[in-house]
Length: 239
Ligand code: GLP
Image 1 (spheres, protein in one colour):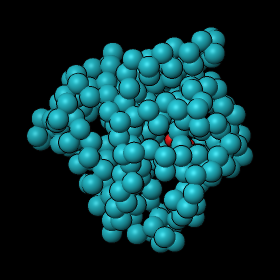
Image 2 (spheres, rainbow, N blue to C red):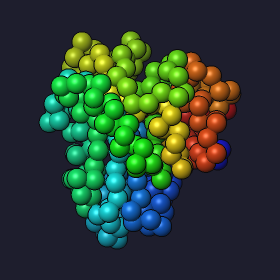
Image 3 (tube, helix red, strand yellow):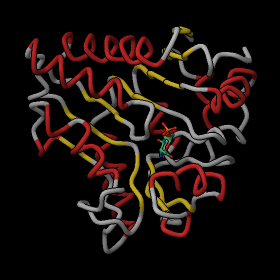
């Protein structure tokens, strides 16, 4: 595991962007596993401006997102489909048919999970980008999710609902369930890029790097052969 500590969020985003750009430049047909949340926003902004100014192309790139809330329409402003559209897809040349996000409105959530797992079988991620929740969740794999799990429906913990309620009018509006890529499918990526920023992540960053433990999903990254962890000084402050 390679750990990079940057001075601040801007430097973290720059380094993270450079890793993604290298993957896409080396392989224009790369499969990128992407994440939502506020952490990757700076990275996505740099990808957009690089596309505009340097013409880095995503035309043949496949994007497979980690997760989606159950019950939000694609055009709901808090759906992850909307988030990706607004914060990345709309300003790069990625082909819509190569962009994948679980459908949280599917009639059968079980079938949707199976469809997504099958997609991940044939499209293994060259790079998987990850943030982390305050309780150590990656994607929406909450504490105690088995490390061999595939895409599944998960019930969000109170801690996750509270953490994510900052984007909604109040905690009651946060969906109680989500579809999430499973731990096994995250760990299948050739390369993992993990980002954490700010004081509120310092405790969980310390915990995940201490030892592999099922109650901290992010600690499963200790088992992966190619992980780059990029932190800012605040999230690295307890190391
Ligand atoms: C959500 C997403 C995670 C993300 C987490 C952290 O719960 N499902 O994939 O890592 O938020 O978000 P933030 O980057 O805003 O702290």
